[in-house]
Length: 198
View 1 (spheres, helix red, strand yellow):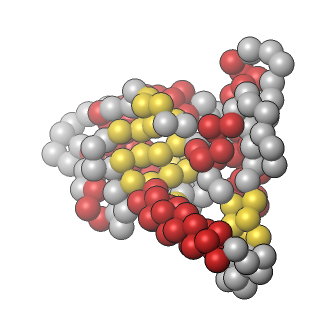
View 2 (spheres, rainbow, N blue to C red):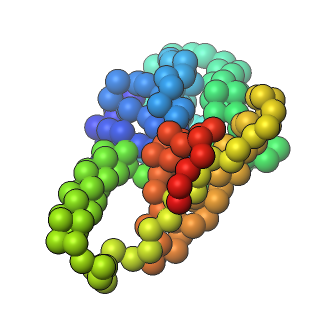
């Protein structure tokens, strides 16, 4: 896999972050186990989110000079990706199968490298703003919004995953509005289970 073709070495989608250089996947800051061919398939899909990647291209990139059962290997890799991301073929949030054509990564993908730099810059701007002690906001700041984790009264893991998926969908939907600055889910997860003074 040639990961130098991707403009960012760290990408983020929802509460997941992928380091394409080191081959690591995290969910809310917790490292997940996804290696080998499944990770390589995910990395290829993340290179061109929203585009269909054909089975032939995947075969050419993953097994260029090898005679393997491509259908079996790809199906196994896609199933492992879905299992790790808690995704499903019937109602995909991340990896969509297009019959006889290939696969497409359908979630919104952003650069984690860029987001880290932006958050640092934003923190610096807001720090300077507080020091000036002014109530006027800059016109280019826009509206800031954070979606906090849902408070669950029960420890059901499936319910917790659904609640997390709902938060991801809300954040993704809000981020489509150009006048909103949406704080990433990974930044608001620190408030899970806590009372927060808005």
